[in-house]
Amino acid sequence: MNEETLRSRYWNLDQCTIPVGKVTILTDFCKGGDDCDDCIRFCPEHVLERGTEKNERGFYPPVLVEDAKCTVCGRCQLYCSENAIFVNKVGERMVSDDEVVPREEK
Ligand code: SF4
Ligand code: SF4
Image (cartoon, rainbow, N blue to C red; front, side):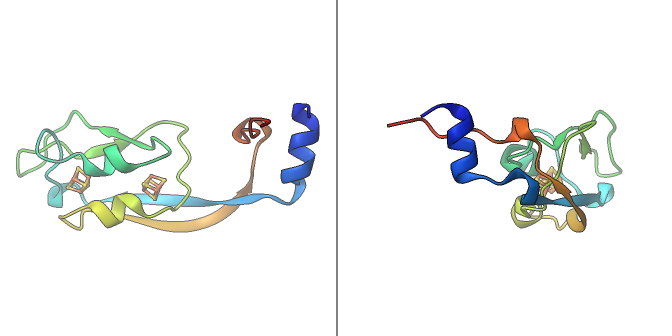
């Protein structure tokens, strides 16, 4: 089965949407850096990276990666022990063709 057939069998890309999230970081609550970075580590979309500016506690809060796409999975919020990061759904977008990975034929 070729890739085009697989795709049409499992996906109708004209009807696939995915949530779009807005990430809010309360920088002075954060203990990011070597002591944490959990939100960075657990984000499946690689939306976050360690920042370079210290907060008032002496830690390095994460910053958003340019052009990264938050899907509102909520993991960053779930794993943050400091309640320093929140995510809200602000809309939906169509799934692009290159985000679909066809299954391997068995
Ligand atoms: S999980 Fe929370 S405390 Fe840790 S780096 Fe992320 S925002 Fe900061
Ligand atoms: S909600 Fe999910 S995709 Fe969005 S930044 Fe947090 S961990 Fe990443």
